[in-house]
Image (cartoon, rainbow, N blue to C red; front, side, top):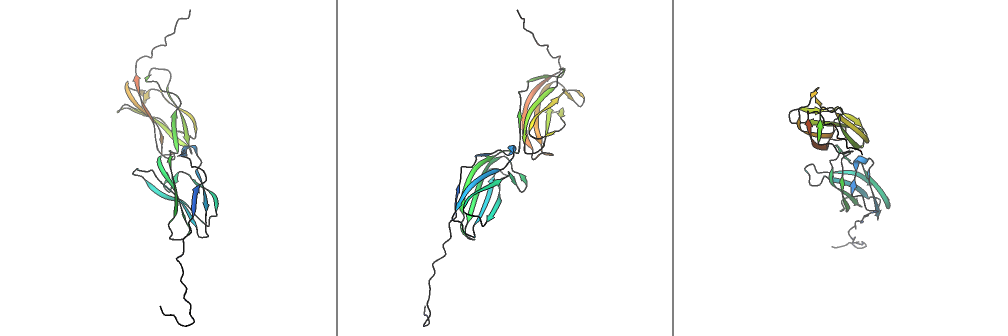
Amino acid sequence: MTLMAGMTFFMFAPLALAAVQIAFTSAPASEYRVYEGGTYDVSITMTEITDDTKVRMYVKGPIGEASEAEEMIEEYEYIANGMHTFSWDGQFSGGYVPAGDYELRFDGTALIGSNPNTLAHDFSVTDPVRLVLNEELPSLYYTTSPDDLEFSYHLDAVSNSCVRLNINNGSDTYLSPYEIGGTGDYVISWDGEIMGSEAPEGEYDWLLFVDGICSPVNNDGIEGTITVSNDAEPSPVLSDVT
């Protein structure tokens, strides 16, 4: 290159992209129990931040399932050096995510177009509602019994939910009214009748489930089988006391 007299030519080195450093301040939880309420909180420590730093938080999952998706949960600009806590409430834009395995990822970028410094963590996510039986059910129920068959259960839920009981033998079905409530203990009873008549004897499947019609999500619930008899319930045998 030919320079005119009195002109000075300067060579500039390529602009080096700042390397944003991201690390977990403490190990994130391996499970997010959504039904307990609250958020999934993750603390990270960031250094070498510049004025144009952007930090994005992504969640992807359920990993390996047909419904797998990824959403950006948060985006921060002008974030400062130091410790920061990020939170997720278990929801994508369409509502609560399905239970399964998920990946949490942070991308820190110092300049537009630079390659992000990435930090990731795998964890599991539960449903926002959970059902647990409080006591084991009998394997045989007599419709002639003066006592109803009781399904005692505990519900954990982020908000009021609708629980129902379905009992059927393939042709005859009993569907209980909704039991509506939040976290707590409940009982749904069956009197041995279907549509006002004594249920035919035989094998029945039962399902205690959360109905998404008035709950955060549907829940697969708890299921089992029971034998129904129309015979007279045997009297308890009392042992002799000597």
